[in-house]
Image: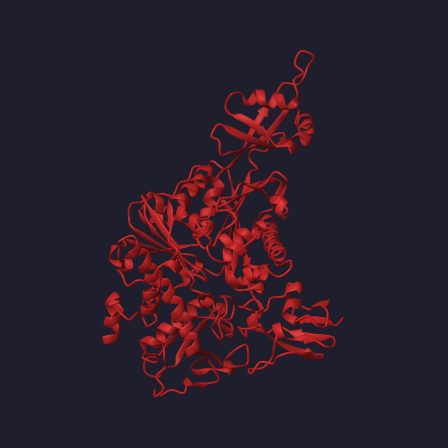
Length: 626
């Protein structure tokens, strides 16, 4: 079998001659941009053959298409810089400080420490001829009538040794159960370990995964760590990943990859703090519905097609070890409940995290991403929906689009007379491509300078060589090849503009349709909360300019940062907040926009910059007149 060497990682493996190099890279854990998941339609899985002979498809701009190329001999494959992911970008400072919804109201954020797993120091009398109750009965006797006690069978194996090693003083760990008067004994340790009590809170996003180690006794965040979701190598959006699971052992592969990622992040948290994994008592996870299914290894094919049925919306606590997470056997995984196939636990956790369910203001909660989710409501009621915006905001479907990593263009300013760009990249490195915030910045700048008309077409008679006829139609040169890290011009094409207009149109049509469904309009919205780290890097004015966000007074906008991780964090330190998530998920009325004819009407009206009806965007209309 041919031997394949992937550079610059210098990973070597043998593969069959008929196996394509994208699949080989997946096996090797090497990331190659492939937004279509290997379906052969995105043309982004470019690789370069340094040595050896291959058969397959060459790309017009140079290099080979990995999903359509197989080795004939031993080969050396170089992964281009645009596919290389640098985690340093995930820890860069937020463009603006996230403000929790509760803080907006001037209140102190206080959540009582009441985790789902609590520790209690118990002293029992040593057995004697007149008191020879079993070890477990001694524990029950000390607990008394406070609550009924269920017991994990594994506790019995350790119990006699713990009692005697601790000289009849042990620390018992009790887990809350759905019944208010019952608890479960899940662990017994010799001596007093009540001060060693930690939880891990995790947000599993489609693109990135973030984790925190938190002290359950004083609520302090001890460490944080993030990484790219390794599943991106199998598809940049949830749809392409669900398609991948239908091939052979695809589901097992995706489950294995996300578990490997979680194990790595947890190890990093422990290494940063010097803590021991034996002192972790619980893990809380917030994720969208598809990511939750992947983590648990649940079938997703029925999520993919109408009537879009998940295996479950609410999930019982899961032993972390049972799904492959390298933690002690007593550690349970608590998952945020989902609402529907495309409104998941990340949104529920975010809503509870920022406290929308405790305030009367009519709030529009927006998580902009591949699958944009929106929630409308307040403490009395909530409606929710998902908009299939596609991967454009994360660089998918954009010729030189890429996720937010080092070298990605994140800010563009267009000179209104010369049409020359001023470009900033993440990390100040040579440009590799354009990330989501840069794409929005670029589109807004080109539109407001008149380089693009309202239909997203370039003005072809402007005094600049930046606008030109390219291989894929008219395009704008963002960065010339001598200034890039990829040795070729980075351009923004009319096809890119069209994809972005579709994506922002789906989001805005979603707001209008959801508001209309409950008899309201944009003017009724008192607060807009932008969730997710992407929202924190978003330029508010530019997002309004292109029609992605409503044109309402700016003081009504608030940025929540990673509200999903915030919700998971709060759930780790507060069992009542976990139950609150259940309540919120049940109070949300889900609207399926795909079945709503008004959504398509609104969507078509949104396929202009910023919209066909400029009265919806008064400030943009005024700026255009000026």
